[in-house]
Amino acid sequence: MSYSFEELTEGLSASFEKIVTEQDVQTFAQVTGDTNPVHLDADYAATTSFEKPIAHGMLTAGFISAAIGTKLPGPGCIYLEQSLKFRAPVFIGATVTTTVTVKELNERRRRAVLETVCTVEGKKVVTGEATIMLP
Image: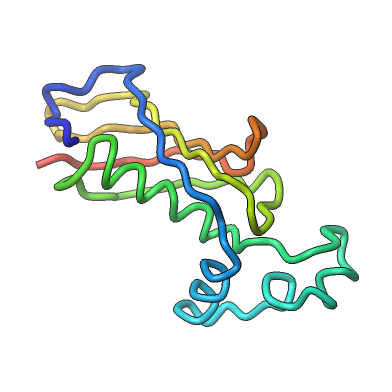
């Protein structure tokens, strides 16, 4: 589904859901070069406050891009800006639900501000705000 700027209304929201796999974490590390052992080494992670490997925060934040690019507003929009707050770890096997909600519309510039929230079992793990431009 894709929304035109004219179809957007404040409060409109959509969600994207993804189970984080070990392969996702390994691939993200390989693509980005972020090989921090807290993500990749169970023995190392066991010595941290998390006690087991956690997904990269930016991997989880990437689900926001998926929600925007495929759900709301969907294909054709341009991602301009994103603020992020990492609130809790995401573990391998977790189901992340990402919800984007239209917060503000700028008709003259054809831009929208979206509230962005990633949750695991109802707990917020990443929050923020995105600005997008629509064709």
